[in-house]
Length: 200
Length: 200
DNA sequence: GGGTGCATGTAATGGGTTACATGATTCT
DNA sequence: AGAATCATGTAACCCATTACATGCACCC
Image (cartoon, rainbow over all chains, first blue to last red; front, side, top):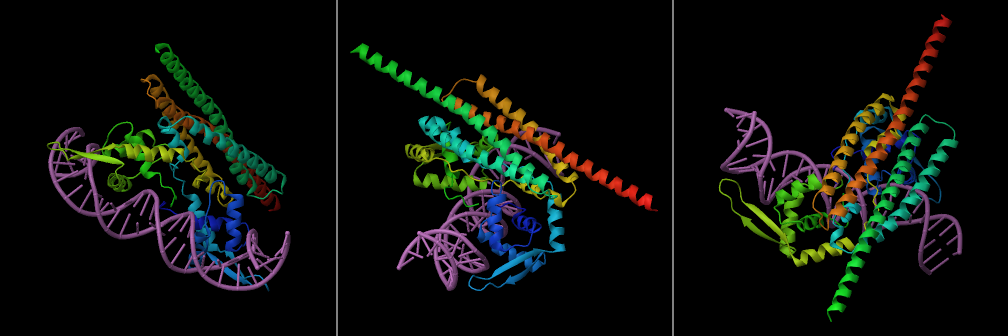
């Protein structure tokens, strides 16, 4: 997608401030903790770690384990922290995310209303589940020991909660609207049928 | 970004159901009408129109105009409508958008709270403006003549309104939280100063 | 015996933005 | 005179995902 200022390396640096980790661990962590607003594939993580190591932003140690494959444990260096801080200081640019669901809805008149009804219904289920997850994450962070990171993690979780609630409200409203359209089409079809019957 | 099922061609087809247009017009329209949830660059639009023309989903006519450059006016064909309908029938996959702002906030403890405060404040301004725009768009659609598309366009606009309102609520809450953190750091700094004064 | 998880990595592929090129007209 | 808008297009480049490759351990 060609984001000019990649951020893919900085995520790794950011997570390594929590504790030293392997590439595999980083992948796991990204999916579990920030997966709701950021993801990174291994095809990106491993090469980026190498680049960061080459420039001295991270160091690596090999952890030998009999039986299991070796683990390359990466730690953030002073230089890495500087790079992270520099990136954090740059105000994030407002980006327009591509929302395929809205795009399809925008062209909804081209197909039967049953189609948007179907995927919105499914979306509601997904978002209800996501909302629950966000609430649990928030609760888990709140009861845990308080790190300096805790308030920030809570803010991110609160974002998820607020957004999911908004989406659900919108979806309810929209589904009601779509059902009204279906109703109108049905009654028009009825009228047509009656007319043709009357004209016979 | 490698979305497996590109959608970039279907946007063009969708917009061409409204009326025949040139590549340039399509670019304008995308920015003005669906720019809040989808964008497309000319480097994408022109080649895609050629591809669509080659496969017979659109036809083109050249509009000669003295002085100004020629315009290639594209119209959607029956085949194009079929392709669009087929795409519309596929339920949109829930995608995790990359939210750089949340990512930076997540690592907020690494820098002074003034930094997130600054960009959240700016974000609030942008989103307030966006909210206003969405409301105006919604009002404009509502007062206009009713096309079959109208209800769907309204739904998309309502999504924007709902989401912006949610973001603004969250930003307010988050800014308050960040200011509390600043307060705590100030008071800690005060205490340290007093302690060192007392120890002199 | 076969699937799943751990663990690292590379290459192919594809999508998308930016920058560049061109050229006329209109506005300041 | 110079900037901006209209209008079309191409090429370079970047970023990211997917698929593939490898190999051991553990569980059913």
